[in-house]
Length: 130
Image 1 (cartoon, helix red, strand yellow):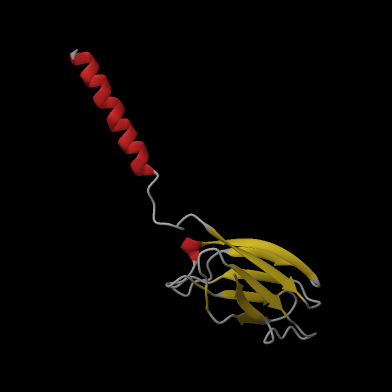
Image 2 (cartoon, rainbow, N blue to C red):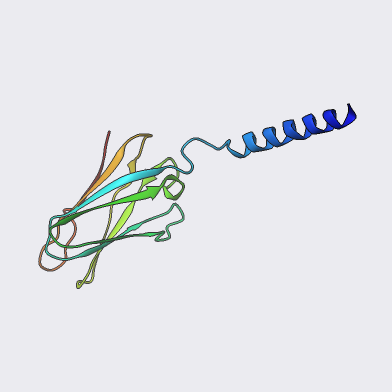
């Protein structure tokens, strides 16, 4: 009888620990889909910028006149679930830092990259789609 009580207590403890390990803040491991459409000739590298101003992760390269899909971890967004990206035109000495946009749960981000022959990225736009 004592053995049965110990076994049942052990099973209950394991069940509780396993259940607690799955509890997380909503969205901490989720990712935000990002579609990047490069409407210029130059290839570009796209980076995420974290709250502390560091470059964060390199999301990837998008060739000229092509579209690529990436995802950004919600943990890598800035405070208040804001996304800020840096775009670097390969072959030019040009960078563009987007204004921050709010990313709500379930929304996707879209980056339209516009470059001229000199690598000017100032016409690029980052926005959210629901």
